[in-house]
Length: 555
Image (cartoon, rainbow, N blue to C red; front, side):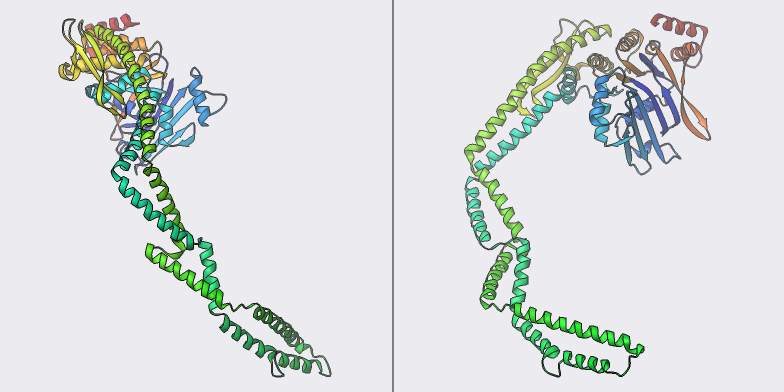
């Protein structure tokens, strides 16, 4: 369950640290004090949308942390272990942390480890469910009705299988339809590509071979000139008495014949001796190089012809010669794809098989939806009776749609009747705003009863109701608190009085800035807060007594 939340510089919250307990915790406060801001901040820590506008005025970043105790939820802790995101072996905790800077960039952490937003959402959706104050506004949408039914039935994996099989079928169907419309042109493409590949395979070489061909061609083209230049250099160095080597040796001999050894000349003599040795090594190297020069006119002619064909081919296909190898690989891949498309019987067989897989999953989903619809409708009907919605009934229809779709073959329709003799009609046509609020609350209560998460949050879901109905709503939420940790933002005293724990949100001026402040109420403070919610500005002895009676009735 949620143990604590820490908020820094979020909207009008400067610094806030709250701890939570099991059961039903209610948040109250005057309009505009920031009750829903706390839920929004928690949503940010859970992976909600980051917005630079939520950074408190004058601050450079917002930070929200939420700590969860998983000691009674070993399956959640095991999931974190699988992801390598546990904090320690001693503590079964999960700390979610989110930072947003003034550039709009956000960072997310789980137990101190940096994670992606997707990873954060995958973990948080196993920890907490938030039912927002505007849920009833989308209740009339068919997509919302489908999602609500699937959530209740736990269809996540089955819907995923339907979606994936539908996409696979549509892809294979598109290939087959493409073949039907392009069978003649595909045959022509196969002929063209086959001819291109045959030509390329006869002459194309890999890029390293192309570089080697270039080097060979350059050597053979200039072989005669290189031979003559090296022979001339060899003659200058070694042939005749006027050769460089002969003159160096003669100079060295003269210096060695001096009548005495002069130390000033020693370094010069050593250098001359070294020069004689080096020139002799050069002569040996030149002779070896000249011996290895290959003047092969036949090979040069062969290379000329081959490289000419490569250049012509490269110009024809508008690529560089060294890129012909890659071009050939691309043509082979294109031919392979077209040959697959060219097999019409195989394509038709594959799309039929994919359709059968999709239809099997979709039919399984339809049957499960029909079963879940009866169960969910019965729970909602009972709850609506408690919420003073009359003796009618709530109906969920699972109707076939004309075409198979990404989420199955069904259209989900929520209907309601005001009394037993009235035929159910779509809620979008007959329900008022207040009735939609109660229907939404009934649905959310039903969904919560099958929730797999330890913590549920209701953000002003009691909008549009009051009186006895509000009292019933409070008892429903308190009942949920017996099995889950429930946090509820409310403006109704009947709901607030049902809380096991009560937090009041207030605004105060601090250093010329308006900041939000939260305090945990004791018994007497709760009486005062409930009285304020009952009586407005002037709190009388009567309203205080009424508030005390409301609290006593629910505890």
